[in-house]
Image (cartoon, rainbow, N blue to C red):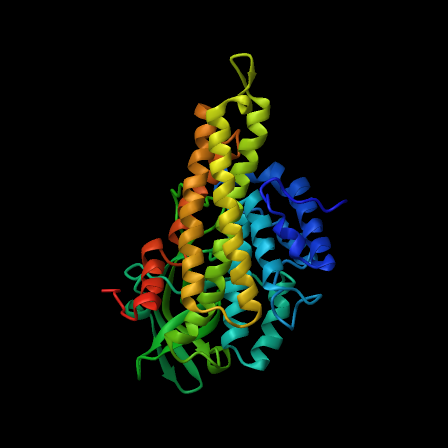
Length: 392
């Protein structure tokens, strides 16, 4: 297959990737187009996750590729961003699964774990042998996770006893391990634990009735005297600042995913504009339709420019919290605007799953909110601009 830029990559940012990265991205694209796109609408409608895609994603090197213990070849943050973009332009639920597995689960272990923990867990997560989830958000704390964390960890000899609840935890219903963040009952520090979901006292309940990311299996988690050995405490997690190191990386990737969702809606709209005939000619020949497409492409192109630059900074270890926050806030806002324009182009057909734009339109709402709301990310940027925190 010849590598050609997508219609949504108007300035051909993909040409910045190395030849090896382009080949890997092309292999992923071929699989997603042939095997995932045809089935994902049904899974989304039934609120089920297609677990059969996990082994192939692992075979393609999509899982765990950011870390030295797992990646098959040297790859850039921009490549990893384009993987998120590629996944999201097909389906945001599959992209979210990969983001939880890679960025949040692998990321927590890679950033906060010991060398021994990295060696034990990262290859197993990258192979798909182990599926992970990330337990930070709680029923009473979302945006205020840094201060509102209520789950406790109490030292008991060589073990820790965890008690508390978590909410909105992606992959949790079928995960093998969950990274649980809790406060040390002794000194109030924030600790992280690799918790096997089979541990007595660990239970999950799927959140039903979602209108967004329906294929993602979000769950409430209850921890009742869950005993975890000291060997499963993340060795280098001592405060919320360590948790934030993980979120900084994943927040930038969510920005990439947001651009991918916008691109998926745009590509669907371009195809529909050429096929749908009204008043005797394709609607793509109408001025107002072309205006919607041009505005959508402008949003996507501007957002791609931002995330490409953020990835370049990440590779040079220059990416700060405010950089990730601005990318997440801006790109998800432009995504929300873009999917609305694309859905508008479909008229009544845009609200049924027969047309993919409906799924992108609905899924955009979840990406707009998770990994930090637009308002919270704006305040992170505002603090960097003014030197004053205005979170409360």
